[in-house]
Length: 144
Image 1 (tube, one colour):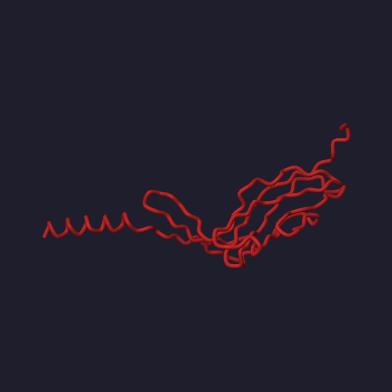
Image 2 (cartoon, helix red, strand yellow; image 1 turned 120 degrees about the vertical axis):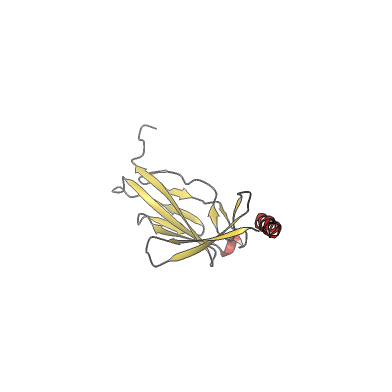
């Protein structure tokens, strides 16, 4: 009997070490009406693969100047979607900040001297990611 249990345990450990564990992470976002399922595939060795989710790989500029154009061209990567099928939108941010194709642009007006929280939504039609950063709007340096 002990030999059968030992063999069964050994066999189970071998099977577990060969199987990848899939975790579904459900996230509720800003408006509490929208949720997304992100599938994470984690191997036993601990490597994680985010599959089918668009991501931004670069850092947005964190300074903008009143009366001057602010521009952020995100480097978006999505393994299962053509670049032309991706969409970008400003979920949270100042009214002067707009999306132009897959770029974020705008000219801060004279009254916008403040720090702004920006939340972008990058979607491939099936999955999406929220990208958050801050922009400090300042008066331009007149001494230059």
